[in-house]
Length: 293
Ligand SMILES: [Cu+2]
Image (tube, rainbow, N blue to C red):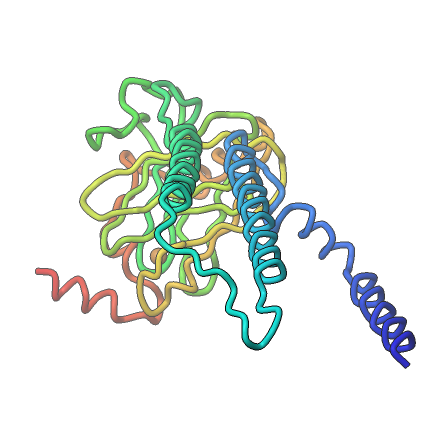
């Protein structure tokens, strides 16, 4: 009877495991992370992976000690109480220091990876002015040569002329980027805090009104990726999706030329105004503008 039960249990487990699709297995191997499509991505991934390893090692040791203590020091007869241990100084020192050491190691590696992700090099290959507005995004691309001394630190712009795209309530915007180029995103918000992120790049950054945040990413794999707002920014937060297309340099330039041809040009990047903040059919952003005054 017991044997039959065991065999049945084994069978069910095997079937459950075999039922994992190719996509599931890929997810498991990736530890639920997307494939890395940026130069910075592997740093986040390695931190994630080794944090899991550290947690698992800690878990195995702790579970082992629990099982060992439960079995070894169990009550063996009804009238015998196992030896009670209290105020064991070496033990208490150990279980205070060990977690502190672990936190120090986690902290060290987190800061190391954070420094890579937030590093802003002085001369990025391309600078894109990004505006996160309720409830979409505006992407401003520079035309012609970039002035590397003006990459948006003081609100100055890297290019003399810009082309742009804006998403609206009906269509999400597309962000086109050249592959293997270090891209600086200057992040602007006219209303509330948003968060600009592309899962496949394994990085993101807050978009804060009143200041310009800088994020540099080097996309390494051509393809199409989803992007989104990561900060609950209001009622239609879930609409703040965009699509990223990583393309060759030629395709990138052709795309900018296309935008210029359809007249989406500006002397300065579009950083607000009614066009960026008001969405079709979403009247509340206008009333919000009114209440700010
Ligand atoms: Cu948002």
